[in-house]
Image 1 (spheres, rainbow, N blue to C red):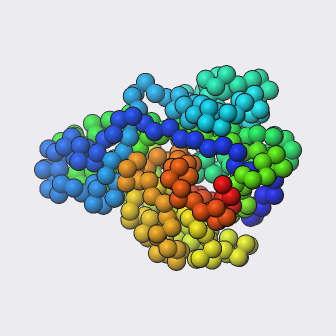
Image 2: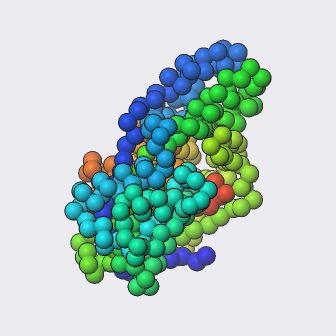
Length: 343
């Protein structure tokens, strides 16, 4: 797929939802104290290897649709946005309420959106939200939609509890432990964004362009479902950074991107090691990478819009600056999107 450029698409509204229960990395290690002792693992390993100090969880009774709908409701109230103006809805979560119906249909019902809406799920691991932005933007550019609502909601409590149960089994060895290690970094949260036509919102931030690249040969490096997630973390990090470097090269060739082009990086949040290696290999200043993983963990596709909204709230986004939304989804797929921040 070639590079995309957008002329007509504004970011109209943005909101996030923070899960209520904070679980520190030291609490997880307390839960695994016997395992740590038997495998002779040092305490503090989880935080020292990942930089993640804590993550957040919802009650088990909170499915992805509820989390996403909470973020969308915050958005409607914050911006006094009439929900009847939405005519396209994408749910981009990794988690789903059911195999069928679509989680988007349940979100549509939770938000009491009208029957004129086209709604569907878009799944692409941690890259789903950016994919939703691209497809929503294309619909607006083609005149098929005036407002697109993109949502994501993740509740990692069940997969975390299942993984802790697996790791407490006396038969596991170090290899099994570390193949499940990445699951311990997962966090929970929700996010929602509305895209609209720039002619209707001339002062709003707007989408500029995007590039994508993939490496499907690496699809076996991370495999997961609600029972657990197994990851070859070292190989995944190497393959992901290599893919990101190739993707950035595409942006450089197509749009003239350079190491000093962007004011801020709003990326999928994985760990301190991933962040450092990514910036180092792309020649980017790590100081412009806005980090939420130390307090919120890896929230999958929620991470990018969640981080963007938190940065907006904390006045970390310079007016007139160019932002890079950057995601890598296991599979592997990478997309980088340029945003002009005017707010």
